[in-house]
Image (tube, rainbow, N blue to C red):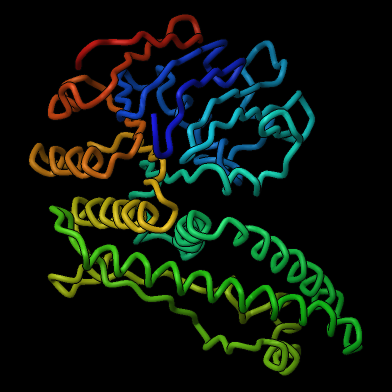
Length: 366
């Protein structure tokens, strides 16, 4: 096995899975079964092998299997380029999540240095028509895939902003209380802006260079107010306005990802449901192509109910692109017929649920 792929996954007391152990090769894995069987639970566990709170942003205690509530654990063997890593992440009930890589305790940000994982879940289908928060998270996940330290900049910015907002709400007017916080926000904010801009440029380039059945999205980073390269002076000048609002009104936390269906010149928010899904898939594939060139291997993909809103032609095109990229993708669907176009190019497993416990059964074909 080469590139970037898991060769083994073991879940213990994770949501509906009491214990599951899977041996894998680098091919895509198609998981099928009825709604509620535990397919999404399985790929959610894989998402926790990347920095952050996973694809559903669940609290740690919400991940443990009930009624036992013993805590949960995920073990994985990862082939990352020319190295093999053993990854363990777990949490006991009421405790914070912990991580070991190759037997040594590590911060979550270290996961971004050994594995690159992207995902697409049904909740993201409304990305273009809901608030900017979701689009910023989408962009920051893409940015994190290129620059693992992006998470540190975001955390530093948000921590300083929370402290500044507390001062604003308390109507503190002494400039000395603000100076250090605003300097931290300016430094971290400039890095966030630069990282996001580089990511958008990489996605645009990857779209333009590809022959694909999916539409190209024209992308831009927007904000209600212009964000200067050095925010310090602007934050200082804006204190009175921010104090009246009780929060910081200017900065990268107000940015938005704007997308246009390039061939039609139509904003993504005004496209049909199917077009919006196709644009999302297009960006995930562009992210995958760009990472394959930069990291040296395509990322691992988690595609939950990916066939929804795709006709057979686009479904086949998606599978062709995944296989041509050489990405290990974990895909879920309600029936095996949704993966028929993959044939022998994929691995298959049926997920069923009985009395609140999920079971995974390997299959030779869809």
